[in-house]
Amino acid sequence: MINRQSFQRYWRARFRRLRGTPNSIALGIACGVAVSFTPFVGAHLMLAMLVAWMMRGNVAAAALGTAAGNPWTFPFIWVSVFYTGRKILGLDYTKAADVDFASVFAKAIKALIKADFDLFFRDIWPILWPMMVGCVPFCLIVGVASYYVARLMLKR
Image 1 (cartoon, rainbow, N blue to C red):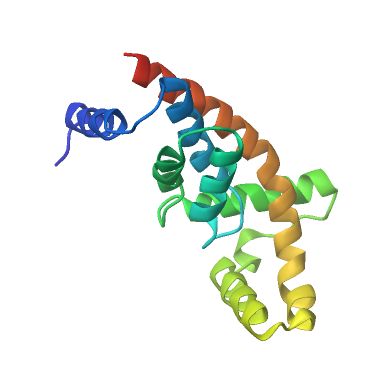
Image 2: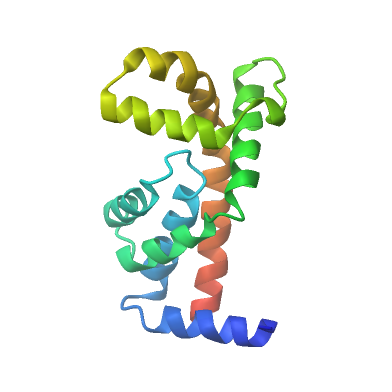
């Protein structure tokens, strides 16, 4: 079993190998973590690297930061951003059990491959739109928080 100290040593060693200033590395990590809260699964790595490059952050650190979104965290992230988006948009309450996110993402891929806009707007858009709106506050909060935590870790 991995204890807390060995876990911290591992990640410190990973961060030390990155080239750049503590600020650029922390900014890259923050971009990766923030992008992990968007509903664009499958594009997180490219989006994080693009955002980090645009903000002059470390692109490799952005790739590491996307590890915040993983099979254990995605269900919590998706439900949170979906409900937050519905609340922001003033939409009615929909139970998480009524939304099969795996099916939505599978249909989204199918709609993109076939360019089936009817499928997209009928089945995917009602779920995707609240998630896109709801991810904004999460991206801002986790992005800022992870920037300061990463910068603090790197300065030590």
